[in-house]
Length: 180
Image (cartoon, rainbow, N blue to C red; front, side, top):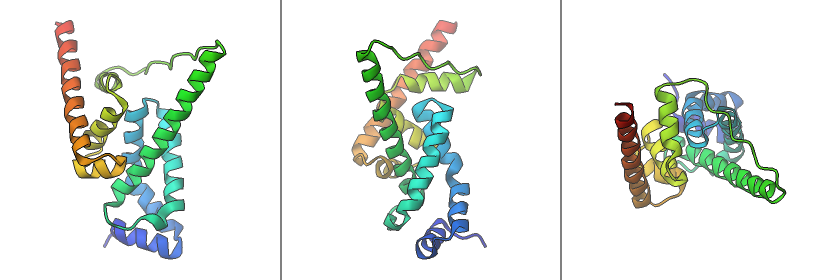
């Protein structure tokens, strides 16, 4: 019988059992990495942020009270790591602009196709819209879980998802018209 996330979390809290936490990481690393990749559009940065999120989760595991799902609690930590990183990048960009040394644009993804199209479409969304859409559609979270993960009110998450979905539909419709 496989232990639940709640059982594993309780074991980690009680004994700091690394094998139990390793199982939690194994179960959720794909979700966390894909969420962060969609949000920051940089695979290497997403992997670094995911690693930071798991380290932070291990350090803060005692704060998990079990009121929500472990998945949403973990995604909340990952989202916080993403926001901290985004703030640092924006601060660095402003400093570089002040000193006259513009940052080079990130290299475009080398693989083409639907994944790149989706990444380009997601890049057109505002940060909060992208986070809500990624959590709900890419990570399979409910609106409530996404609200818990981001700290946004439920109604705000629903609005961001609806606006984001409409913008994505418009993006793909326009791309389809251009291709015709």
